[in-house]
Length: 337
Ligand code: TXA
Ligand code: MG
Image (cartoon, rainbow, N blue to C red):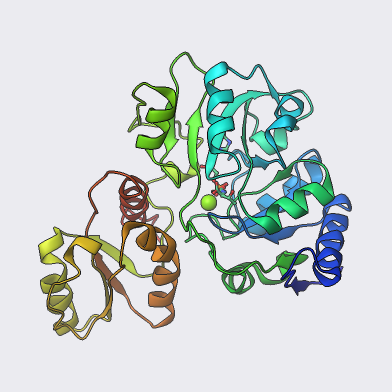
C-alpha cells in the first residue's frame, strides 16, 4: 500500500475530498490512517475490525490489553457502540461534543474485544477537527485511535511528529496542521453510580462540574488498564525533573554549569523571571498556549540534544490539571534500560 502524507487543506475542495476518500478506503481495507484531532494526532483503524485494530497495537508497540478510544462522527451513533448511556453521560455529550471529552460506557456488542483491550466497557468521543470529522463521515463507522506515537512517548501534535515516529507503519498521514488543544481528551468514567475523571485533559474539571451541577472526583489511583496512568508516560528521551516554580531558572543554570544540556519550562505566571541560563527556555504566554505547545517543546528539546528538562507544576486548576498530570508522568520513574 502506498504510504502517503496528504494535506487535505480545504476539505471542501476536490483535492481535499480525494485525500479524505482515499484515507476512508484505506480504513475499509483494514489499513492505518493517522489523522489530526483538536487534541493530538490519532492512529486510526476500523474500530469494528479486530485485525485492523491489532495492527494499531503493533505499530505503537502497545500491550494489547490497553483499550483504544472509538471516534464517532456524531453523538447519534452512540447507541451503535455503547449499551446503556446514562442521562449524565448524554448531557455531557450534548454539551461538549464535538470536543476533547471521552466517555467510558458499557461496551455495545458490535465493539470487538481487541478495541477495548478485553474490557466490557468502551471509550468514545466525537473529535472537533474538520479533517477528523470529514474522515469519519466519509468512512461511516467508528475509528479506533490512540495517540499516534510509540507507547510511552510524547503524543504528536503535528503530521511531521507522526511521520518521524511511526514512519512506514502508517499507510496514510492526513496533515491538518498543528493541533489546537495540544493535550489529550478528558476521560470521564460514566459506567458507575458517580461519574469520575480517569484522565484530566482538554475539557476542564470546572466546566464538567458546571454542566453536571455537582462535583467530579479525580481518583488518584486509577485502574492499571489506563496506560496514561503508568508512572512514566508522555515522556521525552531527556530526563524530566520537577522543582518549585521559583527554582526552575536556578536549577537549570546549576545543571547547565555542571555539564548537562538543559531545557527549562517556565509557567506563564513566572514569565517575568530573569533568564540568565544558557539553557533552552520556553515561556508559554497562557495556559492554553502551554497545553498547545507542551509536547512539541518536549520533542524539540530531545532534538536539540538536551539530556535534562527542568520544569515546575502549574496550579492544578483549569487546563493546569492536565498539564501537571502530563509533567508528573513525564518525570515518573522509567523502566530500567
Ligand atoms: O485526545 C485523545 O483522547 C487522543 C485523540 C487521538 O483522540 N487519543 C488518545 O488515545 O489519547 P490514547 O490511546 O493515547 O489514550 C486513551 C486512553 C488510554 O489511557 C486508555 O487506557 C483509556 O483511554 N481508555 C480507553 N478505553 C478505556 C476504557 N474502556 N476504560 C478506561 N480507560 C479507557
Ligand atoms: Mg497516548
